[in-house]
Length: 151
Ligand code: ADP
Image (cartoon, rainbow, N blue to C red; front, side, top):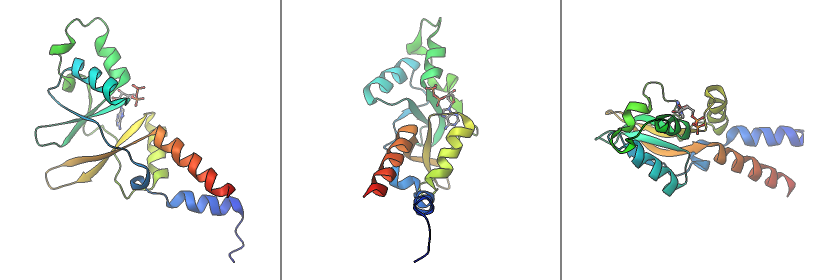
């Protein structure tokens, strides 16, 4: 028996959770897709963040709801405005890997004041998008952790 308190055990458990255990499926769009396409995809897929990829399927940027709202204000022709004009682009995109600790991903969300991170796999060609971690995943982890503790 280690003599650890309930809180210490809970903290130990929390610190060991990885991104892979809570990640969701990433929703991606192509760089040349229009802002109009991005808005449609966001509604259809019910996500708040889209990851932007190039022809080789490598990560080049991120578009959020506010990016799309900003681009829509006073812009008549959203169907001919490519998302790569308005996205947050690499190397300014905050990322995580599947083996990272979920807590470290949570810290990045807070630090950068963003809703989500792409989960990436580093290949010789570039970053492949393999998942998505958002505040919703964090909430799920929190609830599950509390549930386990009560049992
Ligand atoms: P919303 O616009 O829905 O409030 P965010 O708070 O996530 O969503 O986005 C705020 C800004 O941060 C946007 O300009 C967006 O492009 C950018 N952003 C979103 N996710 C990331 C990320 N992982 N790395 C860097 N910038 C990001």
